[in-house]
Image 1 (cartoon, rainbow, N blue to C red):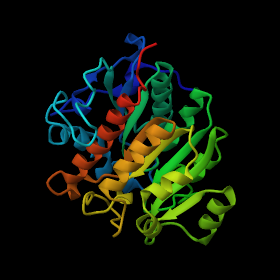
Image 2: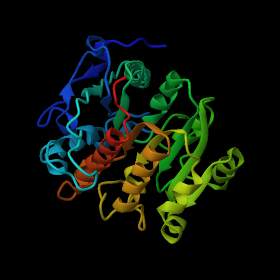
Image 3: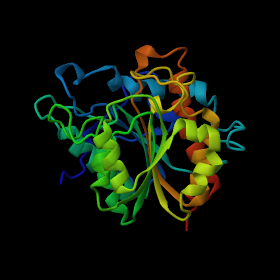
Length: 324
């Protein structure tokens, strides 16, 4: 297992140096505790040479740059969360920067990502992860065994992501939920917003159903409502949210490689986040697969920021970070 070291991450590159005005901390060893920690994981596990550094590797930077459009100032009233972001509390939120890539050591960035997330969890922090493609939650999910709890995985996506492998690669963006299903600390899996056509074949659908995954197509979500979906998720759990940008409707997240009509709306995602925070404990969240060059007026990056705002704001008000 890779031990945590400061050099596993690099500072944010330019513009807004952090997400939502948080403190940039390049060495987590300097902290005794933390409440919320932002981490960019730009690089996945590519299926071809063209995907080694694609535009999704710019996703963490793009989301950070949307900070002042998503939240003008953290002390101002926010109607989505019912007050200022941190509710005028002394919440320690840091931005750890991005996991460094090394062309000489393919795959090392996944080990580094796992080590950094483990360190965040050991400090008592909630990791907020920005990708990168949908392979990057795999090391994050591995690190969650640090909590010693069974994790309920909440997956928002147009696509199923249960491929065993693609081009011999088993930890790429078509496989994160298949890999999660093999982790002993991952329990129930809820897959919300499925629609259209992606990499899944009948055999992947069969594998998901055999595991017991709860498949909730977008049309079912729209017909029954997000309240009905929330009611299916047992209360009192430890929830991790992995959100592929193409799971959200392309009217508010157009900057994706695989836009699919009829996706999850902002209102539904807000209710899902707030509902999970109230039902149990959300232990972390990632947002992946943003392709910044395809964005329109920063709306995709702003939406991503707003999802994190809703998680932070609702968690603060639920007392997640109250000091003993």
